[in-house]
Amino acid sequence: MTDVDAFTSRLNPDMCVVTAATDAERSGCLVGFASQCSIRPVRFVVWLSKANHTYPVACAADCLAVHLLTRDQHELAALFGGRTGDSVDKFARVPWKPGHGGSAVLEDAAAWFVGTVDRRVDGGDHVGFVLAPVEWGGRAEGPLLRLDDVLDISPGHPA
Image (tube, rainbow, N blue to C red):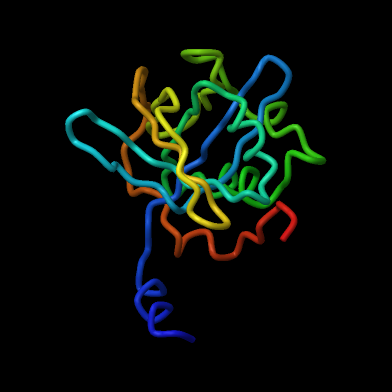
């Protein structure tokens, strides 16, 4: 363990599902690296792994949808975090609706927003998608799903 690992291992961020859609394909993944990154104008950044099936779809999309889950939605988190879109149509297994710009919004998410991609920032093995929120909604209250709640989910994408 490095000194920075001692720092990062203490973090317990909220988890979210990020979905991307083009005319040809939909994809989505569980994300632990995400945060509001500006107040005025409001901007939010989600970091997607370059190894993830969702990454090339997100690169081709104009908008991404970001969904917060509650702790009782572990099964939904496991679908988007533990299965890969290379072999599973995740959207055939959950209720979803089209959102702004052709995005894919998960109907059961506790809260969600759709953002237009303002810019992409290469951070190494992940790319940050800086989003300008344009549409949002939600359905539930309750404690949010956090990293500690999903440690039992093995990543579905190839290493």
